[in-house]
Image (spheres, rainbow, N blue to C red):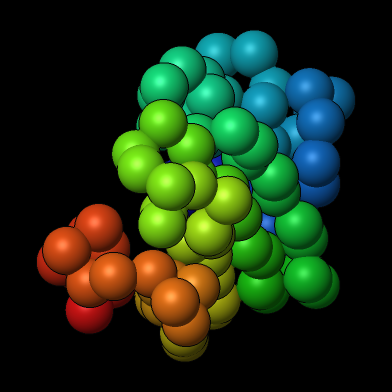
Length: 103
């Protein structure tokens, strides 16, 4: 995400256009391809919250009944030219299903 942010000077927009998150050949296209290929998600969405902030929201599925439909949110924000990532798990998502970097 950082390299794409630096490349275009702000967070990418949703889509495949020149400044899009899924622009063919971009680093972030690979990220989205990988997230969408996972059998443990039902939806992956990208939201540009502003020039310096964006969110990737993953809705879980095929894990178990208590986890399916819960979400993981990955929030990226500029921090003096670098990006920070804050991971937010759905409040009712058991920690054993939350990536260690999100706990």
